[in-house]
Picture 1: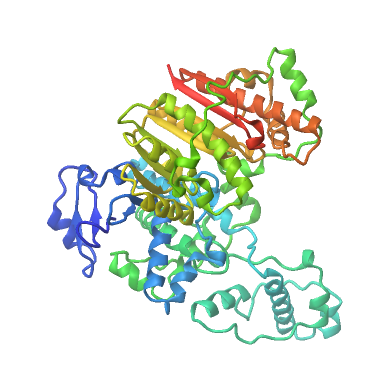
Picture 2 (picture 1 turned 180 degrees about the vertical axis):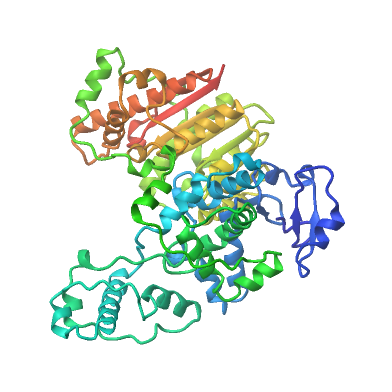
Length: 592
């Protein structure tokens, strides 16, 4: 989507060459002005991103990816009309719905990437190859069966316990008050009362207070939190209708329509079926679906499958079970380090190529300095020292006309300095956090930089070509993601890692990274190195900091060897001075 040619408009980018413009635009929503545009006609910054995307009028600031774009539309809708609080509530508690990037959040990845791809594969498969329900659909069914955690859920769970006991008394007239207060359990399968979760969810949707609030009985107030009943899902993220439901509905609808045409039995998807029926009760959903040409199905109510049957049916592939990896380790790093030493592997650092080089900060405009990013003077000095190291390495690699990408750019400390000091290069800042990127854009505008652009997106949604990738303190797995992007583009890289303790196996990355480390260390042993690599804070004893530095060096040596397996020459260097940061390692990688 582009709001700059020449004003605010919606553009569709056809995937094929033989698309009828009039047919497409005629069959879309009547109250939207829609145009077709080829990919080569898109602004340069958009051509580097996966769609959908929104680009600002100057063509320099792009938001890409389904969740980022939808969150932006919701924010702008509310800003244009603050009376539409119900629209803003689609972002959920603390406005965090689908905010975490898909690379680190399994939930965002499931909603935004995995289920759309799974449904697309299901729809396009030949009849003999689409017999099984996609694993990601099964994963969603399982997620809908997990207990709900919401803000203030203790209070709601106590209300649910009170409602359950009231239902038990109503269903068993002879049951005495004393018996219920003594905690005797009465199983009732015919609930005359609507579920509390439904009452809470729909009271919010209809902008009303929860009805029939009753003071909790003493026995309810005394009940331990661990003995309270769990809350059931009403919508995808719990009790409340959010952006996640909007993202999932078109995909699940197409899956259900196709399954119905194929005569498939949905008896083993009772929770998805209940969710699908419930979403249709949300005010405005049916009307919106009709305008989009979606004829929502009327599904029969299905009985939940027996737990053991659901467990068998809902088994998911190993890559979706990463959260069950044992990440709790006992013992220190010495046995692991000794094991590596016995195989001739120790942390080693290459000499710094220009240890005394420094940017002349005093003669630069104030907007170039990291101090403009609203930090203390001490921290700003350390940030300048860190930038001295990265900029020196990039300047040795950069040639006129190069495209330099600042991954995980934050407020643009690295990218803005590079754009100012290398005017013959194009610099692209990529960051998932909107406010950080807006601050970077403001600083760039103050400097009048014309060789810089900004992309708010997950790293996976950037697919442009570039010559040098740079990242200052890329957190955890993000370092490996940046290296992967650079290797795919055959680009050089200058990266300072951070947050080693957050490293863990993901759908895309397995640890150790290099073949040599894999031959010696198990995943758990490698994780011990990662956890202790975070033990480098200045408050710690010197001996402990030294062990932390050695663990950092070993983790990064593994990464360097993995990149060398892709025909790169990689050096692991300590930044100068080492006091500029507890995380003072830096990679310099050059494609062979």
